Image 1 (cartoon, rainbow, N blue to C red):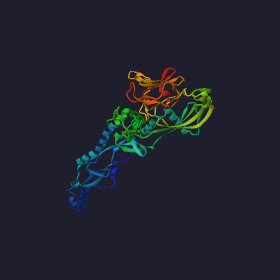
Image 2: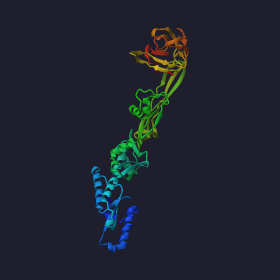
Image 3: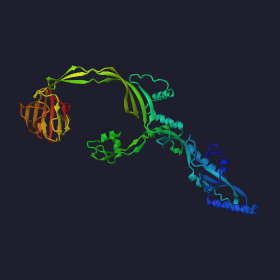
Image 4: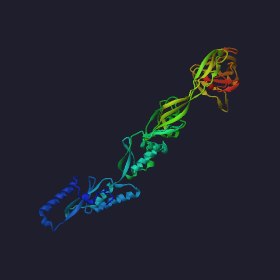
Length: 492
């Protein structure tokens, strides 16, 4: 049997086909002329001409040409497939379009045989295709593999990219014998309940060019990488390139590559549009799991006010103790990331013990409450505490307020108010609880030494006196004489 022929088909079966309806009119006219000659004078021409068999060659329904020896075409087809087999070992190959012959007996003088024309016509039209298994996702053929076994292997590899082979096998074994009850999970033990794809996935038969067929590993990479989908992000006030990249699962290099002209140090503006086009997988893996855990239960904290205790002081009356509970969670993961988590059941093993704290409410104006109010009206932290320009920056700087009023961070007594070198106009307040605060670079001072000030009261106006690069407040905090980071204490 020739390689181009389908299994179970013989060349004689091709000759038994009904005459093609699409025979060229010229050929049909030749048949008519030959028939007239034959019927009109068969005895007269018998000595001058003889009948021969010719073959009309078809590729599918397309007429190619006429030959006297069909083996010329059969050998050409066989050679074409043999050449393809050399570079595509193991594939089941055949011609993309069916090759067939229609035999006819004609007078030799009117046979119109042109084998070279038929051969040349076939060389350009003859394509070799291979039988394949198509991975169909969401109704669309995405990848072609050698056979169904390879296609199933690819799907299995995608699943085991996110769940272990051991857990997957245990799940398949349980499904095969569903009557067996599930045992109780041990502490921190996880059990796989189901694995599925986010899209409808099936395998179907296909016939494609051999170069389109890939192996299981290549199919896994293709399906996981997916296809590019365009997205545009509109920049908002306060956005940074790094945050935009992270929010769209990109690194900085990928974000820059997607936006011509963008650099690491590019300044972006509100309402600017950035291309965050990314590859989105053709399919994702959903895994349902259950996990058993013993967890701590946070204790409640009860505050009991005491008017006899100075405001800002606290005392623990009863220490809190954490409780313990046993909980079983149902978790759904998408490509290994948790997208849903809910409690299936829980049981409290140890009840938590409430913490009781006594809080003083008695206000002593010259004594601080222990928490600091924001010393300015609005604005932002333009510089934090730490080393700057080769020396220690002892506090924080607040700039661009909505109002330049400077306020006392807590109740206290003014112990210093006036010009102090690089600090410019400076105020120092002793809060009589171990804390002192400093306010520097003021344009003007509204308090005097020895004056008692209340939390939030005006003490001066923001300025740029002393060693200052612009209008701002320099604010320092000290506790028992030791410098503190103001950001640990102030509440904006």
